Image 1 (cartoon, rainbow, N blue to C red):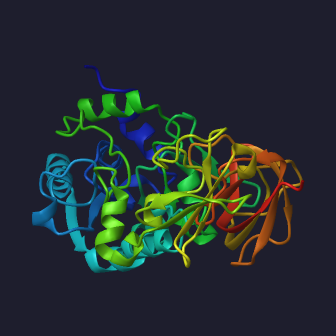
Image 2: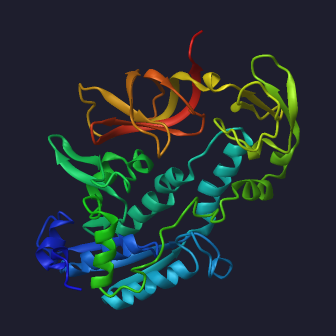
Length: 384
């Protein structure tokens, strides 16, 4: 296969927006062991800069060996090391298992225990993946930290901006809304303008052993998708049985085996047949171990109260849109209150939005630009 044009030195260097000639620069690459971060390392090496790969070990190596759908553990660390050897770059592994467990996994369990719907990938980016990697990269004297995320860093009038990836099917901007302006100044996302197919071609052209490695699925520390099993193991009280109650009438319709098995918007698994219309989870009272259900219309939300907000750059005077789930379509909203500096705010939807749950993130966009977001703390139903 002929080399892609992006693997020539000048084009590769352009992807990193370096402050000096590449030969005078040092790039630290966050290497998870997957094909995306491996291609970033290959592009960085091709640029002519000095490259250092860093992998954060987030799980016990022995327990994770052979595990599929994860990252930063077991075979993934071996893949990252093999790629670094192939490219002739330095590679370090840093043990962050305890920090990851405390900041991400335990928070995930606590959120489900409280009847909320957590997004651990954002917590990971806010903690180990960015905060800790930043400190390490700066200690190493790097000019930038590069990752394999599918987002774009675009220079705007007020400085670097965070934009959605050109390939909407790969866009990961929802998970990076909490990136600070200082972090964005230092970060590089060389894959944001590429389709996945070209990234795999680049991996093959560079002779990387993980060129055909499948993408990770589900939550990295729940590779089999059974998140309730993880939560039950860490917080056994989450499996306390309770009632399934109709949110409008208060009628008890059935029993459940623990609130950790349910999220707002869920329809399957309720096991309460014989109802005149389909019922969904519309609320969770974790304290009383009650799962509240109702018809779809009861899921309609007109506003969301958002906390711990972050803003990236100035707020533009244009129509904002918001995503309340990673795969949701951005919808028009108005912002009532400040955004950023952890201030609370309210997002009001132009049309009723469905499936909005406390614990999720609400991410705000101005066109393709991410302007910030925060954690959904509460919602306001549509007025009768």
